[in-house]
Length: 132
Image (cartoon, rainbow, N blue to C red; front, side):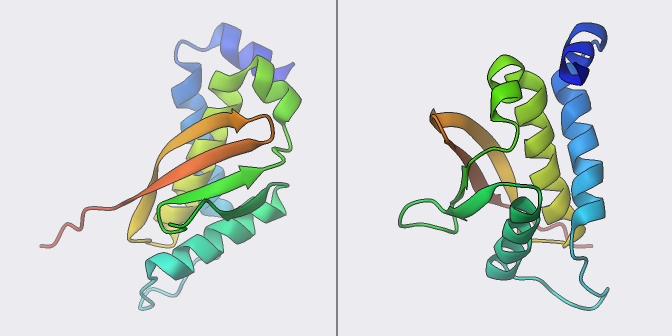
């Protein structure tokens, strides 16, 4: 019901879902201390932990685990099949929020939903470093 309301009433439901997901991702992340630097491997570990806690069965995708995370058993699969724009955008935002919160050197570039009936792929990309 809620995804239907979001889809029907908000002017940009996908962006609203990404924004909400990012906020929750930041909240759920295991935030490192201000002086701790997180490498890509540790960032993926922390992200995988959050994804498992919310009901996914995450793992490496193929031979390059640094390039994608396989998300199996979406806890909202039935709703996502009907309201993909909202549910998948929320999950994309959640993952981006976690990686931002841990100051990871990578981000989720895109989420490829339902590449198989119980498999989505979160594609990772390096974050450009801005130095002052």
